[in-house]
Length: 256
Image (cartoon, rainbow, N blue to C red; front, side, top):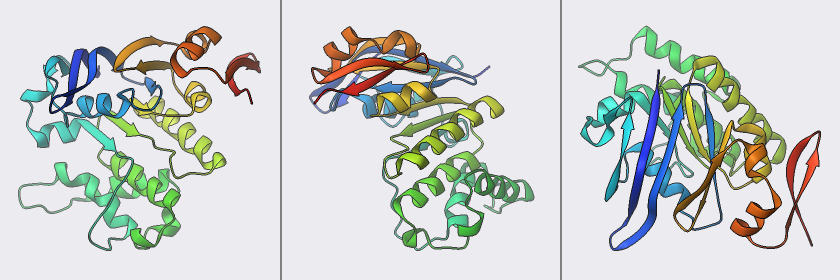
């Protein structure tokens, strides 16, 4: 059973500490949304979970093994990352970009197998990219490009999926569709998913748990119904927001 666990992680950049003793776990078929104000350390925590930033204190473990001790190729087979921004210097097609997700699984001589090709086509279909598969990535809209990058991560067929603002270039309808797909894939494939999100309502509707960061510290890690309350929202995000209910669920509303 897959478990990614950050224990008392303190991390930063140079002399600047961004995270302070943060603990977070995610397991198979779970979707955890990291939320918090700007500068809270959300993306840094995600990079620690991915092994891209090494903690100065604490550790990140995948099924009990410290990820700092794992080879990058082995880690790439287990953990897929969808960044906010994906740039390529070459005019790859969507199919070629999605195929990059198989890099860590290629054989000694780098040749793609039928299994690799099937994984790529499956990811393209899952993200509704069949009609765009032959298009160049640099000729897509921001939202289409974001779907292609998520397809690349799915083609990796990892156990853990880490997403940094996966809805950033999408309109509201596609935001909902994207997060619904991520939740369905987590259940169907047994993925352990962690996503950084700014929209509290989208996060609450998609995630099994909300992990709230503020000033580099973990303030709360619980079910959305527990996290979305007037006192916590005011203390973490400041005034100007109210908590109401819609269809029995708490929602955050602006107060103008």
